[in-house]
Image 1 (cartoon, rainbow, N blue to C red):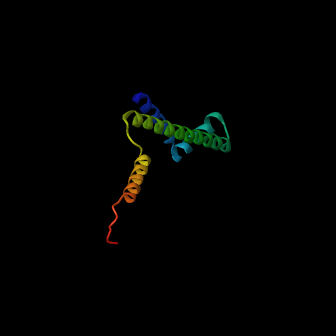
Image 2 (spheres, one colour; image 1 turned 180 degrees about the vertical axis):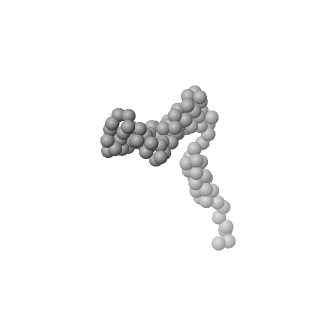
Image 3 (cartoon, rainbow, N blue to C red; image 1 turned 120 degrees about the vertical axis):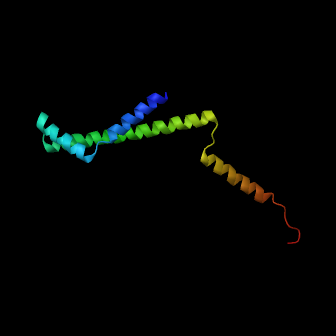
Length: 103
């Protein structure tokens, strides 16, 4: 499962690594090879960027879910839960603190 996750992550990062320079090179090739206009090429590149961003978001969400499942299996407590319990403990300690009778 880890290997599949690693491969998916690498694929997602590879798709996102399309730099502006590479995009311009690809645009030039598209114009030469298939005779598309610069406007059509740019529209295609924008579509590819949008799809890459969507894939990145999906990959991030999937990674977060897998990490959470692993933490749940291991019994790791979430930070929010720990902070909530610490606040509750503080409140209980303040409520049950012995009062100084001299005051």
